[in-house]
Image 1 (cartoon, one colour):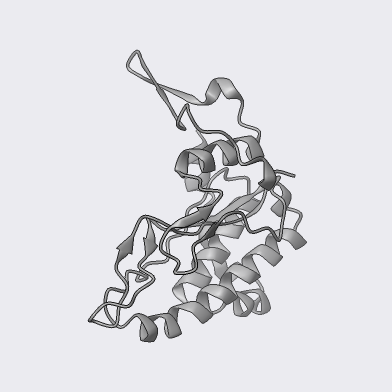
Image 2 (cartoon, helix red, strand yellow):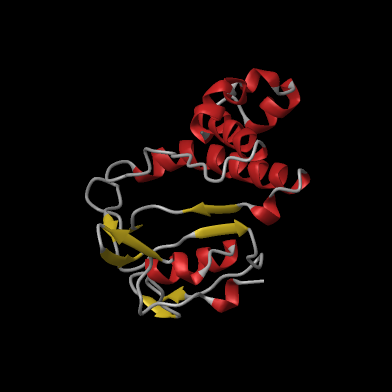
Length: 194
C-alpha cells in the first residue's frame, strides 16, 4: 500500500517544485539533486532512503579524482544536514556515510589507493547520536586500528538503538531459521548515543 501511495505521489521526485535557491544550495550535480530528492522523500514520511555516490574506487589517479569528488560531496552533505536540521527532521533521521571498506594509506604504482579492510571510517549524524565526536583511532601510519576497534555489528546495534528498534526485531526469520540482524556478540557504541 505504501509503494502504491508513493507511486501516486510521483511529484515527490520532481525537484523542480523546490525553489531555485534550494536547488542551487544543493548544487546542480547529480549527487546534489539526488540528495534533494532524498530530503523530499524523508519529509514526506518515507522511512529509509539510500543515495549512492560512486567513483570513489580510486585505484588509479587518486588525487585527481578526489579533487573533483570531494568539494561536491562536502557541499552536498553539509547542505543536506543543515536542511534536515532546519526542517526539524535531523532528530528523527539517521544519516550514514560509509563505503564497503577503507583505502590503503600507501599510494600504489598507479597513483591510486587499493582496498584496505583493516581500518576505515564511517560518518554518522542525527537520530539520537551525539555530534562532534571521533571514536577510535588508527596507528600513526593509518594501517590498523589502535584504539576502540568496532565492526559492522557494533554499528548496526548502535544504529538500531539510536532509531529505537526494539530488541525483538533484531532477528530475521529465514523460513524457520532465526538469523541475527546484527552480530550477537556485538553491542551498541554507547559513547555515540545521546
